[in-house]
Structures are given as structure tokens and as C-alpha cells.
Image 1 (cartoon, rainbow, N blue to C red):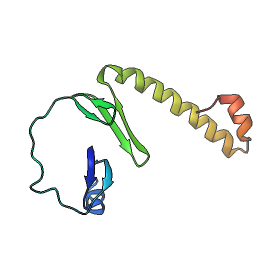
Image 2 (image 1 turned 30 degrees about the vertical axis):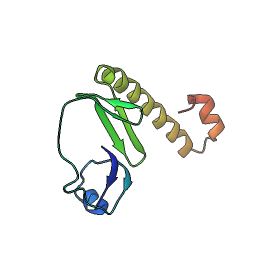
Image 3 (image 1 turned 60 degrees about the vertical axis):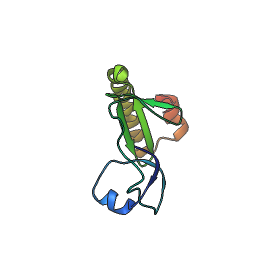
Length: 107
């Protein structure tokens, strides 16, 4: 995760390298950065990311799960995915959106 710009986006995506950035930038960072510390908490915006936290991301965004909440988040996520699968199945059968919400709740 980069709290700044990314160059060569197409190349990075082709490599399937998991990087998320604030913006794209044509300028090279060579000579303008150096590693000073690692395995320390960092802050991006108002989010603190600590060593051993889990960071998941895709084209829709990034989420940080604190290590101590991982199991709880996993179990709730599996429950939510199951609910959404039932909702999609009903929608494919032609059930109206309002009826699907009545049956399964919102997601």
C-alpha cells in the first residue's frame, strides 16, 4: 500500500503485484526514498496499520483487519457471503428486489 503515487501502473498490474495507491504519477521515485524502518505501525489517513494486521484489497477498495479481530471478521464475512448468494439466487429466479430485501435483509 502506498500513501502516494504509483508509476508504471499497467506494468505493475500485469505482474499481478498487489499494490494500492492514492494516485498515479509519471515521476520516478528512484533517489527520493529509502527504507528507514520496517515492522512498525504506520498511519495512512486516519487508519493505523500494525505489523501482523491483515490488509485486503481489490479494485473497489482496501480494508485493514486488526490481527485480534481476524476470526470474528472471517466468520461474519462468511455469513454475509452466504446471505448474498441466497439473494442473488432469488433475483435470478425473478423475485423482486423489495421482496428479496424482505426475505434476507439488506447487504
